[in-house]
Each structure stands twice: as structure tokens, then as C-alpha cells.
Image 1 (cartoon, rainbow, N blue to C red):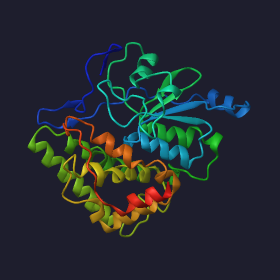
Image 2: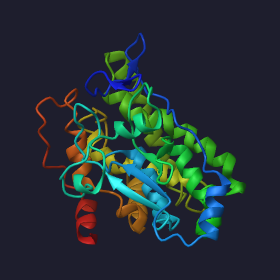
Image 3: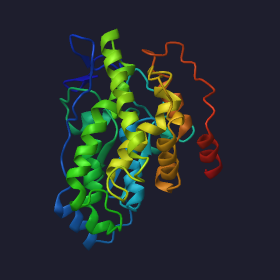
Length: 320
């Protein structure tokens, strides 16, 4: 936690809570778009290196949203990536030698919070990922994954000219409604379950989680996609939660009424998305398990479970 640009106390998962023990998530602070002149600079120039950078953690569903979109839209040459270690330190996200992370020797910072103080020397708040970083200007552009998805899809379209449109005009209202429906009850609902500080708030949250999953199971009985008949950002938003559910949220966050593996239609939908490289390439189960089970507030021993045994684990391992 930074206060006026100074690290004030060790990282804690519970940011705020209300009087009934409900977990309250911090609101993102950097919400800028990419200026048109930056895009024109890329289009008119002979850029041989990336213009922007994503700082991410594979454990983090919000960061993985951005990674999936980047690959789907073919922006690898425009936006490079630096990956933190999965385990959270007392100073938040850090770089190091964990397999699959960016080596400390390849970055000029130790901790993600340094990006925040470079961008705002008096910043107060948590230092989260993803971070969309302007390499030339050395500052954060945006740290809100929902914004970053739209920036990559829409603002950078003159550069990538992709056939993929994650937010098509004719589906925008339906996408917004779907996103709103799953955010509170499922995407953030699992955190409200795992970080609840009262029985009441836990019961409320976990009930909402499974009411949403039951509704989604019915939806995917007749639909192949979250919205319409094409891949959209709603599929990305849902996928990243499903990928972490059985390996972390079910046990660690006590969202244990059912597993995703117990839902036939949801499992089929999830495995169909895994067939798309942008989804499977950016799903790192080792990081997910190591990261979530390093949260001492909910797992003080730090023991990482061997299981669960799921067929798609082997699928990912074989694909990599």
C-alpha cells in the first residue's frame, strides 16, 4: 500500500470492507486512453520495437484478460510483456526467478509499485496489475483491465486491423449487460467469498456465485458464446474466472458447492475456448496455484495442493 508515494505497510488482500464484512475492491486510478498522435506515430514511422508494455501476473484474472486480447488481436509487436512472480511479497508484485516470470535482470525495477511512483510521486493506493505502460514517456497509461480491453480492440484497430472485434457495435448493449451480470456475482464474487470477514457476507457472496454459475450452465446449453454467435470480450471476462475456479476459488476461497467440472455445459464451453491459442497460451496453472496459495491471509502455511486432477490440466501441459 502506497501513501503519498511511500510504501506504508505490507501487502494485504483485504482492501476495504463494509460494516457487514463484505469485501470492497479498490477502484483503478489511471484511466487514460492512447492519444491519436501516438497511433499515427506508429503508422507513419518505422518502429522496430514495442510502443507500449503490459506488466502482468499470470495468477491475476484481470491481467490475463489483457494478455488474451493482445494475442487475439495480433499486437505482440506493438505491446511487449513483463511478467511478475506469482507469489505476492510484502511489497506487492515483484520480479524474480520463478519459472515463467521475467528475470530481474531484464527489468529496471524490483516491484510493480515503482511504476506507480514513477507515474505519480504522491500516489496513494494499491499497486495492481495489469499496467499499460508508455515506454517512451515512462508512465502508466491505464491500470483498469476493462479499459485496456477496449483500448486494444478499438483504439489500436488502425494498427492491428484484426478480423476479431471484441466489442462489435451491434452487440455492445448485450455485452455490457452480460459483463455487469457476471462481474459482481462471479468475477468479483469469488473474491467476496474468499475475503469475506463475516459468515453473513460469505453466505451472501457464495450464494450469488453459484446462482450465476447455474444460470450460465443453462445459457451454454443453447449457446456457444457468452453473447451473440461470436467471440467477444465477455468470453474473455468469463474464461479467466473459470480457469481459476477449480484450482483456487473452490478450495482456497470456499466457493465449494460445486466445481466447474461438475457443470457439463460450462465445461464444454471452457474447453472450447482452451482450443484457441490466445486462451491456452496465457493460462499458466503453475503460476495460478503458486500465487493464490501464497496469500497468507487465507493460507497461512503456504502449502500448495497437488490437485485437483482435471483433464484440461493435461491438455494444457501437452499443448505447451
